[in-house]
Length: 203
Image (tube, rainbow, N blue to C red):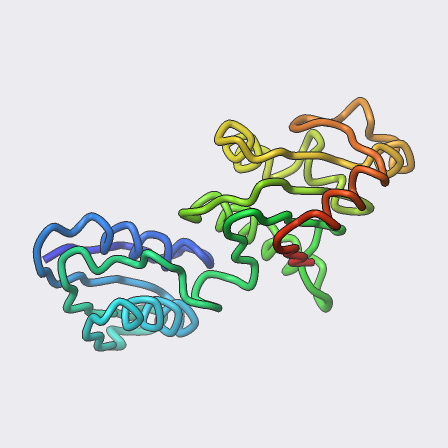
């Protein structure tokens, strides 16, 4: 029996922790995943079922759930199922473009949580994007004080090119605050997007 404690973890951590547990198996095994919300239950279940595993769910108490996975050895999630982690799943020769320090529209604080989770999810992909471009409000994410700096530095250390629009940095008065990657220009941004095999824009 393998237990994955994802209590208190925000998306996409429950799925990522479960994926790692599945990938580590060398023989058929039962994995119990503990989470504290129904969204995590649904996401973990969808990902595990995509591997061919049998999955059951149980509510243990208020904000306490258990997902039990009867897993097959070597049947970890080699390809992340759509929507199981988040809506940004770049693979291969992909360029990610981020134009805001928030993801989606509605509540700004939730948007900031979502974009941070999305960038972290990118660090966990089997195939990383070739390049990540930050412009307009997205330029703030590559500057001092950003909650995503460590994740971006991790991606850069693995060969992902991180670039930020210089005009945007100037506009926000943050050119001297750039903390990861390099400064780029609009021609380079357009050229990179034009030549990309796939463009992912999570904002």
